[in-house]
Amino acid sequence: MKKLSRSKLKTIKGSTSCVGCPVQNNYGTGSEYSNTCAQYFALSQNCQVCVDVSADCFEN
Image (tube, rainbow, N blue to C red):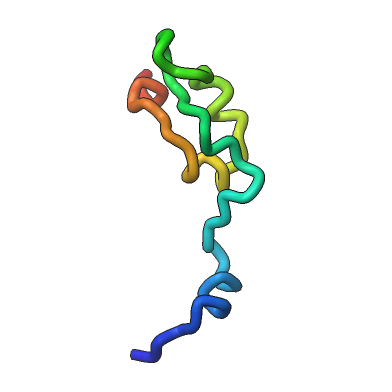
C-alpha cells in the first residue's frame, strides 16, 4: 500500500472542504437550534457534512 501526500489526497473526488460553509450553525427542530431542518437540506452536500444536525431532521 502506497502512502499519499496531503496535496494528492485533496485532489481525490469526495474530499471535503468546509470553506464557505456555515459551520457555526446547528440544524434541527426546536429553539435550541439556530436553523431549521429545511435549511439544512437546502445546503450543498459538501456543506451538509460540515455542520451539526439533529437526528430529528431525518425522522419521517
